[in-house]
Picture 1 (spheres, rainbow, N blue to C red):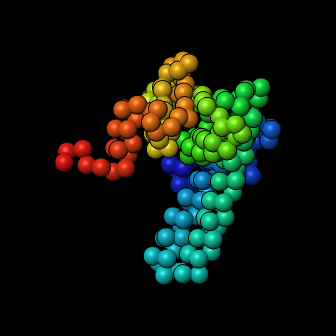
Picture 2 (tube, rainbow, N blue to C red):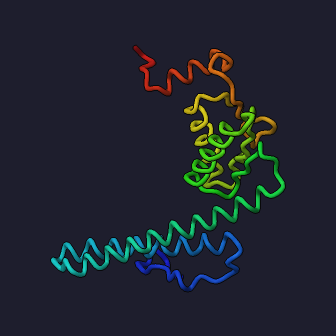
Picture 3 (spheres, one colour):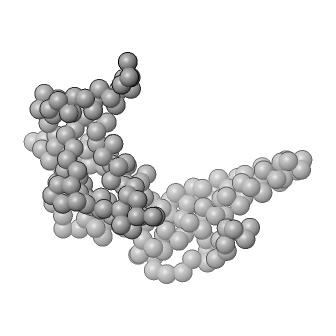
Length: 194
């Protein structure tokens, strides 16, 4: 595969490995992302030089690579979810190995499913990890997922049942407590200073 810093893009067709493994699809997605970026950069340069036909062709190639990138990462995410959630109860969702955007989409689905369940689900444990494998050890999933759940006006308890989890409780607004009311007020865009 090529190196993005050398100006060459990776060849998505050169990805090797087992298509039943998420790593294979992550490599495919990353290679398509590099090819997308190279095509868009070349399109911009061709347009700047006045070669509009070539710019259009390269732009279409970039869009095709973008679609293939998204498809590959969706396949990787589906495999990761299946690996980490097989055998778990419906009230648990392990988000390890997902990118933030993917995890947010899965939590949105889980919240909708919990609310639609008959009888409605009362609790959901989101397993986000501690961020130990994130770049610079700075957690990315946990703060993003906490914020998402708070925007849904649900009770959020980080660190329950352990430090890598978030407990979500589907409670009535009157049961959220005063902290929940303050968070709901703040997330509506109210001015704290005024």
